[in-house]
Image (tube, rainbow, N blue to C red; front, side, top):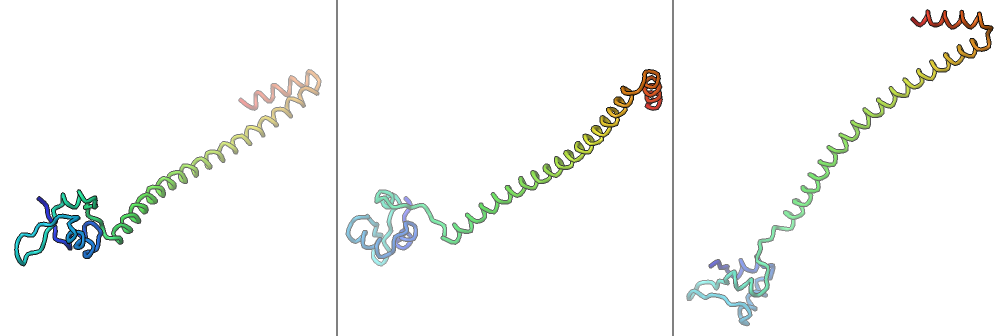
Length: 140
């Protein structure tokens, strides 16, 4: 059987020493008196049956430090994800820029070919044939 001194039980339950001692004196909580000159001890089961929380509580600063550390760990994880997203965004921007340049080159080539077709279409037949065959031989 696990027992506590009045002071230990007070620390464990969060009650003041005086409040716990008065409950024992009034008979609300049963305490064991092992003999003359020895301190009274309260069984854990007695504290639990009185509805008192007997789980050890960390010191308030320890709780705050623990919460802050967990928040820092969460934020560190978020930072890693954000850095990964930033790197991916940078590569996507570079990819879009390359595609934009390729599109501009393709549009320039299309405009050049349209102009050549318009020139050939407005020329007489014999001149069209020469324009188109000379262009094909130049491309080859």
